[in-house]
Image 1 (cartoon, one colour):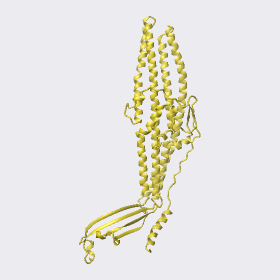
Image 2: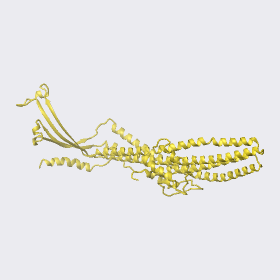
Image 3: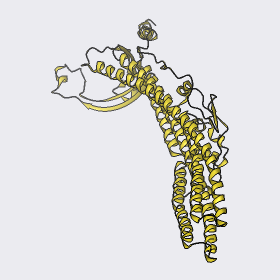
Image 4: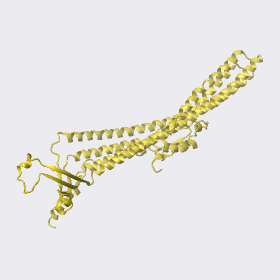
Length: 482
């Protein structure tokens, strides 16, 4: 009973020191930056913006069931999201491995050896005991335990850094989700825009064929010149030459959407070649406030997590300058004969603390600390640059969306004038009051404006997608468990 006291004391003393220990190094605090109070440009026509909460499923605001279905499939099928999910699992496993260093470790070993001692070695100097032999069997059974008390938090800082790396991996997956859904939506808008251009061009081709027949009839009746026939035929051929380019763009966009869904080329032709109308813009678009971006954009959250990890690594580097205590113990049996291997006299054990004090490391610890501090400052600058770039992207996207709305409104007015001009020119030509060149010119202007209107609609849609992406909305749909 008396022998147990020093043993308990041997454990109690370093344990008390450990409990009194601290975690050295700087504590992480979220950086602060002065945010603009509000966004700048707002649309003066069409869809309006306001400072409301970001719509986390913004693609539904286009009221397009096919687009919504594609996004739902994207969350399940996209390979980039699956790769990012594996990186989260890697970071989580790495954190657990680092955290395990702060727990007691135990290992068991058992061995058997037949030995013969040399008669010319060190044992030849010892006086042999009666009946002693230089040949013997040795059986050993040892349970070894150790526990790094982590007095100054080197292990705890390492765990903190790994946990921050896990947060960074999660933010990177969110960024991948945001990029994927934005790319899908933009490609879908462009596809519907190209298909709208095809409808417009085919409608004008049909009109040009009618005009060509009209001119040929007039020429046959002697009321039109051969030049009019040539102009009408040339106009028809020019329009028809634009179809292959649009068909090529359509095929490329369908394949781009297929790649996002991890499908082989042409796999989606059956469901996407149908020429659905272009999606409608929402009446209003919530854009939040600039400060909101720092709390939801995945790239900012990833930069913040990287800064957290770098700060924790500084603490780990500082802790390396301090002493550390490891409790170690061994318990087992050792015997020359297997018959008494587990007998009480065969037992052996050792227990006690080990104090490690860095005395001279050749400047290694100082250099490592300098490296970690520089990495932390780099992370601070990276975070600040990421925030400023996010604000710039959002402001640029807002401006682009506002201007696209103005362009679309003006193009609609131009279309009304061009349609009226073409109708008048065709009517006057039928009456013989003008030559066919005016019909060609006004129809070309009408086709150009119709195409410009479809293009401005597509541009408004894609700039809105870019705005949602810049505002950091949309990654939630791909979160595990949603």
